[in-house]
Length: 253
Image (cartoon, rainbow, N blue to C red):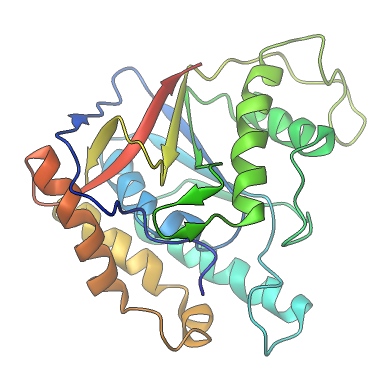
C-alpha cells in the first residue's frame, strides 16, 4: 500500500471551476513523504512552472519507514534522491527535506513552528498540501497526511502573526511575518476547483511518479504510473471540460 492514495472520487465529479493562479508568483508545496506530490499534484506543478511560477517543495520526512526490506537510513537517502529527480521532472525550484520521523508526525507546536518558518522564508502567495480528512473514498487517510494537512492550516495562520514563533528553529530571530493567501488541497474529498494538466503537464507528472523507481519496485501491486495518472485525471478532465485535470480544494486564508 502506498503512502499516498490516488485523488479520485467514487462517484462522477460535478463540473469544476478551473483554478487560475492569477497574481501568484510563488507556491510552496508541503507534504509528509517523498512521492506524496506525485499522485496528481506534481502534474499541476508542471502546469504552473510552465507559466513561470516558482514552486518549492517542503517534505516533512524523508519517508525512511516506507520500504519494509531496507534499513531506514538507506531508505531516507534513496527516497530523497528519487524525490529530487521527481522535482526536476516538473521544474520545481527547490527541495527541502526535514528530519521529522516518518510515521510519527504530530500536528503540534513543533510542526507548526517548522512550517511557519518555511512559509516566512519562502514567502509564497499559495500553499499546496494534503487533505487532513480521516476517511476518504479509498479508505482511512495516513496519520502523517492528516498531521501534515492540519499543521499547514495552523502554520499558515501562525506565519502571519509576528507574535508567534518569535525565534527561528535554529534560535535566531524569526523572519518577518508572511501571509499566504491561498490554500490548495490535493486529494480533497470535496473539491472546489480543478487544475488543467492536459498534455505536457501530465507527461511531466507521469515522469515524476516514475522517478520513484526503487520505492515502486517495493510495491509489486502498484499500478503502472501512466495507467494510474491517466485514469485518475481523465474523470476530472471530463468534469472540467479538458483532457486531464486534477481536482483540488481551493480556500482563502
